[in-house]
Amino acid sequence: MPGTTRNLAATHHVSGIEHSHYETRRSVSVDPRSQYFLLMSSPAPGRPRDTAVTARILQRCWEVIATGGIDAVDIEALAAEIGCAKTTVYRRWPTKNDLIVAAIEDGLEFGGDPSTGDVTEDLVEFAMVNVRNHSRRFSAFALAGHSDVTRSLWHRIFAARKSVALGIMTRGIERGQLPTDTDSIAVIDLLSGFVSFRLVARAAVERDVVITREQLVRIVSAIVASPPRIQR
Image (tube, rainbow, N blue to C red; front, top):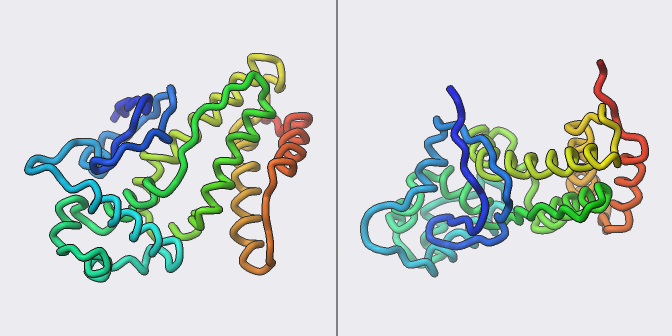
């Protein structure tokens, strides 16, 4: 079944809250079978919702995920902390997974398309968004065992981020800054894996683990100088 295209340009809306950090001029392919995407992209009928309550719910859910993981999210406890009824939560997000996805999406920085004219600088800027997101205490490892959440986040965030990264690589190849047979996916995975491993796995057992912009410049420069190649 062919996918539909959703343009992420301009301002993205999640449950009545504007998020300008989702700006990008690229389009991503979205599986039309994703009921969550269709649900969260369409305004629900009825009276206008209190956006302040929505923001508090998303913020508290994000804090719970960041400190205790996805399994720690409890709708009843969350509603009690916010001071609202459970129905207030369920009117906005029909299931707990819908709320979790919305909270993660609200808490993460999407980042734009840097397009500086230099592939090294663009990749560094791209990777710095990942660094900042990890600094917000979110880990992709928290998604383990939660395939529905992971699948929804892929459609709403990760696929679009991948599209931006592939655009960076394509421009680098077109400008002659990278060989034509560069394995773009491998480069993206190398950078993403480096950030995740250092700020999640190493940070769990070592103190004061950080990634600086200078470190990323050195690593990206080395990758660009001798990138992995596609095997013909």
